[in-house]
Length: 355
Ligand code: CP
Image 1 (cartoon, helix red, strand yellow):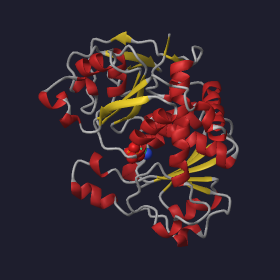
Image 2 (tube, protein in one colour; image 1 turned 60 degrees about the horizontal axis):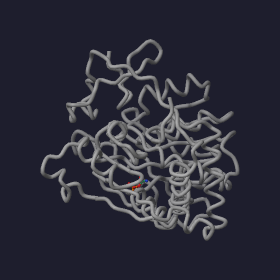
Image 3 (tube, protein in one colour; image 1 turned 45 degrees about the vertical axis):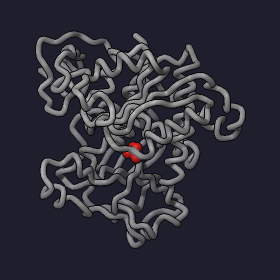
């Protein structure tokens, strides 16, 4: 089964990712050629959670392609404030626009939205779950700045538990040959077990480290992330984790000259600002690459009939997902969609085990 929704980068194969990267580079080289590529098209940006880069890069992407945008960045200014459910909001907006970009604090919301949309839905982040277009941003950046997507030693550092960008990045890069990961975090904020499963299933080498200064020396890429304050149960728990890993000039002395530093941003204080002028600091350029990647994605979803994404085979389970962060806990009309993985029933919305 195939569709036009980008919910999880798993649905894109390596050829499709390569096609998107090539298209992004073509747009970068000749932006004028694409100025009217989406004339008459409308992008709806539905942001139920704060954003600077993802929202505005999607908006500028559509504007630079000649299209227009509608949407909200505060659901309390929409009829969500009156109690409108996701299904009704999406059903209505899919009759107004040509493509939807949605961010929501609840896991699985983009997948849920896609069930009620007649137009492509792009997941711009669903709680601590996934953020596939950030990964496309990262991939375009790696391709442009390192010249390859394979044979990379990648260090990911910070909040690896809640950092959805890290989960999406690992899931994408295990598809390429000979990539290895150093997972740098406190024991409390390590990657979820399902990410370890993915690394192991793909025979991808990884090591776990609790020391950034030691781990940095052999990396091609250091991917820093912020500690996600909004995902902690209490301020005390957040304060225990805050500032454990800070990249500063001293630690950077141990890094190779050709290592690049990425960060999905926003930065809080996990990279000191005096590093911004270091030629290895790539995070602001990365944000700009993201705009080109999103232009390429919009074009491929709207205009390339062959660019269809793979769907999972879904069944209706008798059990409801018990993950308190899953959209099925909030939108009670949603079906108990699940899929089978290694003999287990997984929730189709949040990817957690339900049986
Ligand atoms: N990287 C990223 O998702 O940034 P925003 O939260 O500002 O969109």
